[in-house]
Length: 502
Image (cartoon, rainbow, N blue to C red; front, top):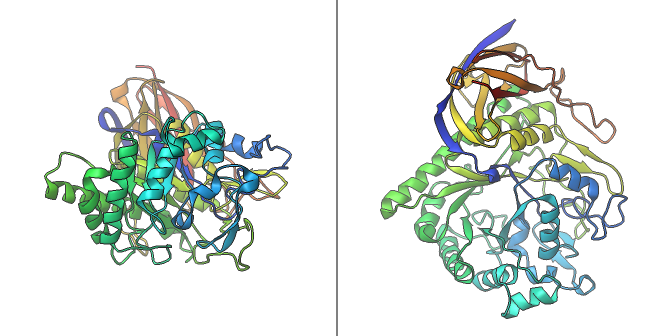
């Protein structure tokens, strides 16, 4: 048996241009993300600076446009000065966010070097937990001022004549969270963030600044936090952050696959608060959203290494399954459906820590199931998001009602003359006959129909079996003029690429 679904894609139903930064990621000094992830001197693939070549290759294949650094909870206790200058003079410090020892062998300059190799911009974060205005403005001066001042000349003395010119900066991290070093009330944070933003912009007027939203929609102060913070920072920030994670720790797959509807609601709610403050201030300025932490996070109930003060111990090294990849795919579709408001997003994190890429110290690298929808969206999801009109059967789950079995969106890349349909069939046992009407484009032809599927929803890629779950190009999509038909397997991620001929 199979279920029926329909989708109308019209070239005039434009939602928004995709900001490439929608496909960003995040690397924090946590677990083996930095040490043992992107940086491992002595590894067979490492370059002269200690960067793992195999990790770099896998990351470059994702075309990650921007990477948030250095945290995360880590940044709220970080003294950035400890991570610059000669490496043999850098002190080790007790890192209180995760109870480990930080060697500071990778810092601002090393990460800037690595990001260039990866083809990514840096979304820099400043410490508004234990520090504030002075450290933040000095860091901007160090990173972005050409020369002729103490901090810019110090950078030059460290071997970096040209400024890094980081444009996007986060004003702290999750400052509403009681787990955060230096956690603050909304008023305390809003005042500090506003004054810090002013000083940073006085050093470099070109900066784009991200204020901290709530750590999640489940926080007791959610929405009130956003309203208060924006009321205090509106004129001096450009983005408000959102963080959200999902899991299937209850073992309810139907409910798990519906959780991207929570992301939809979260985005809409925060956008509404932003617009409320805009109306209150009678402002013409629109605040955009940066969903700069999102992912499936299965091990989030645990935190910090059991043995304190280790150096880069393994932490949060979740093993992702097919069903996890389907949720990641649904979340990517959700981000695209909100591309008019969400301009930046960071899947957290990029390597080893709840990540699509895993490494073994001194050994090989392998790609998790979640790597593939992320890669597909980043490569093929560039262009203009088109509003799809979807007809799909629906189901109810524990936490959600009217969940469409078809989760889908379309992106038109006018430069390449291609339309890409991203689609997830949420039905766990039945295939889906999908009919797509693209007659507004004239005739189309199928370039490729890529499918990620497996008979076992709990199938995963591991060190010993890295090719267990791989996408294939045996999808059945076929075109007849301006109409496309395809069979979407049960519980599958699908990428249908179409060339416009008419």
